[in-house]
Image 1 (cartoon, rainbow, N blue to C red):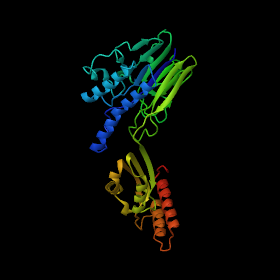
Image 2: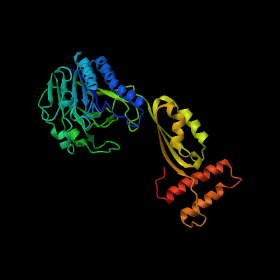
Image 3: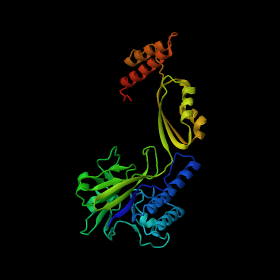
Image 4: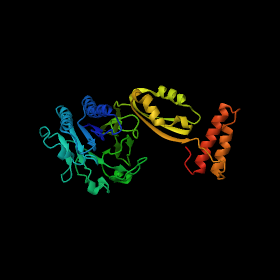
Length: 368
C-alpha cells in the first residue's frame, strides 16, 4: 500500500518584519497566514494522507487568538478531507500545545507533539515519530530521543534541528550527525529549522529540509517549496512543489567613479513595486554622494514594496601633505593623478579602482 505525505516547516506565522513600514508589515503577515491555505490546496489536490509541520509554525509563542483560530480552521479544512495533521514545536514556538488550548474543538486527527507525551502515532502501514524541540536538551541530537518501534510499514520521524553538514550553519540547535540519520532506521526524516530546501539524506535514509514555504528575509532567497513524500514498494520518492512567494532580490552596485545620476538610473532599472529589494553599494565615492541611504530612500522608497540600502563604501580620502606613511604617500599620489587636467574617464576609473584595492590591502581588509 502506497502512502503519500506533505512535508513543510518554518512558516513563522506572525514574523515581525521589523524594518518594514506598518502597512507593508501588515501585508506580509497576512501573506504568511495565507500560505497555509496554499499548502492545504496542494495537500488536497495531491490526496495526501497526512501533512507534516516540522516546527516553527509560528514565529513566537505569543500569537493573537484570531491568528490561532485561522490556523486551526486551516487544519480542520484538511481533516474534513480525511488528511491528518502532525505538528512538532520548534525553537520559536516551543509552547504550541498551550497556545492552541481552548481554540476550536478537540480534533483527533490533529496531532500536536509535546514534551512528556508518547509522541508516536501508529497508523495503518505508517508510524510517525514526533520529536518536539526542547530548550533544556537543545544541545543534544533529537534523534537520541527517538526509539523505533517494531511496526510493519513505513517509519517517519519529524525533527527540528541542525544537520551538521548544512552550508553556512550559524547555530547548533539540536545538532544531528549524518551517521545518526543513516542508522536511524527511518524511511524518511522530515526536518525543520533550516529555511532553505536541502537534501540531508544519509545511507538508505531519506532526510530533507523542506525550507520555509514563504521567503522571510534576504537570507533565504530562492524558490520556496513544500515536499511530497511518497512511499511505495520501490522506495521513497521526494517531489518538491513550488509555492508562490513575494520576490526578494539583492543587487550589488559598484559606485566607484559613478555619479548620483548614474546610481539613480540603475535604481530605476531595478524598480519593482511588488519586490523586497536590498541594494548593496560598494566602492570609493565622492563626498557629493553622501548620505547615500537618505538620498536613495527619498527618491525610491515608494517604488519598491520594501527597500533596504547597505553602504559598504569608502570616501575618496583627503591626505595631509606631510603624511609620510605608506597610506599617506599612496593616497597623495593617487589624488595628484586624479586632479590631472588631461585625465581621461578610463584613466580616472582605473585610478579609483587602484585606490580601492590599495587601501583595502594597506588597511588589512578583505578584498571582494
